[in-house]
Image 1 (cartoon, rainbow, N blue to C red):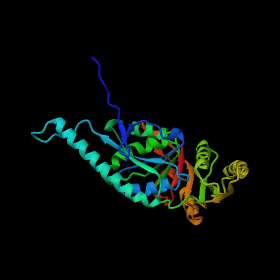
Image 2: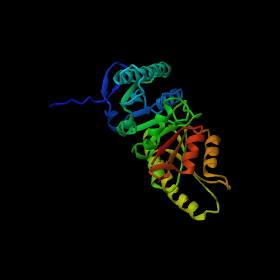
Image 3: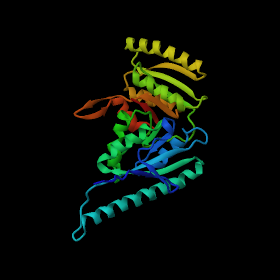
Image 4: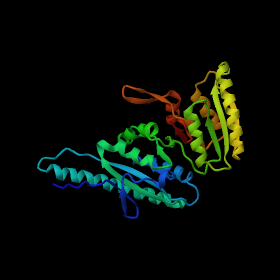
Length: 306
């Protein structure tokens, strides 16, 4: 017997749909991932200022559909499931329509879409979309709001297993213009090198890069290694017509994250570029202290790469 399988689709704001795993401009486009809460408008504005010129880009709202829902007495399970799915689609479309109206003032070419998938496949579905983009922009989920637990389920996998650079917009942060002042948190690691490499693809040529290593002056070896690597890095950036400077920040006993946050504030940074660090523990990934602190405390968007 022949069977057919319905392919999940993403619905665009022009009424069309495409396969849910469709790539976004073959690894060159910007994809904004939404969490169905008011912070999405801030996330979209940040993404708009990272998209060059009149380039088209996409904003995607994942809509997980459960396979089972509580069934009121006297109602069939299929009817209850259909009612639940319809409510989720309706809520998602209302949220997207609100975002479309708010983005109209920026005159940016964004397609706001929803992508439906089985609830148990949510993280895998989000990763498939992310891996087809050149840059992903997302907010930090919170504990509040009905959709936030679902957003939290794909946020960490996105940063660690997505394979793409991610601009994260923490709560309270915003990006209201094309980046002009960029803080690069530098260390002699693969994560930091990759983050900077990816950032250069998206940053305007005329932005100023301030490369810093936050360390204690007593850590002579760390200071020496950082200066050695950074001097070559600055020379490389200048050969590519980038305005850059390097400084070792003596954190004077304060935590690294506090030193970086203070530097970002003092230089009026529009963006912080850094590697995402952490470790696996009991089958889950746990961010390191600096990464975790900046995700929750930074008032500047972060471009992260793992």
